[in-house]
Length: 254
Image (cartoon, rainbow, N blue to C red; front, top):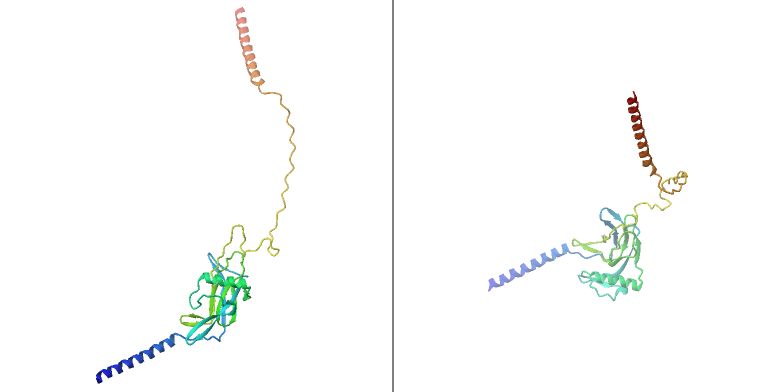
């Protein structure tokens, strides 16, 4: 009987020790987010195909669609008043279809959001943002660049099991120069600031010489030539024959 009670006591102590150690490991690997701390979001708009192209002048708008709060040890996401009709579970991965519905809702309600423009390095800065879930939308199109698809950003977000309050997002964009269009990195030849190449004066053509008018032809002019040649040869031959005949007559008389 004593041995059974001793064995039970040992098992109870072992369970308590295991529970204490497991709680200690959980505390070291998981921490509570500081929801009173401000966050910083940087959007880096860059296309890499053959070479790096920074998208300058893109207008980007963000909307806070939900806030964060703790219910005991559970972090919960609560939609703000303008977005209460949404049903997507923000604690899980949200589908692209649901995100497009969020964008359409913002356009339908004409919500203001926070709009900024990317600089020459393709960066858009949003400092001092309160905690929450944000919808990021590009509201215009820059020449030669595609617009990125809307997406969600969690501030703060968890990375490597730790909360991160300084977030950099790199949405996918594509740079493509269409045929017949100009690369914006090259100077515009029609711009007054671009150097103009000296133009050569038009070449003056020499005056054309007046060609004498052709006389009208009434018939073929080449046919008498061979006739005359044959007739001349005939006369020469006849003269030679007559001369030879005269010599023979003279010789007979002698």
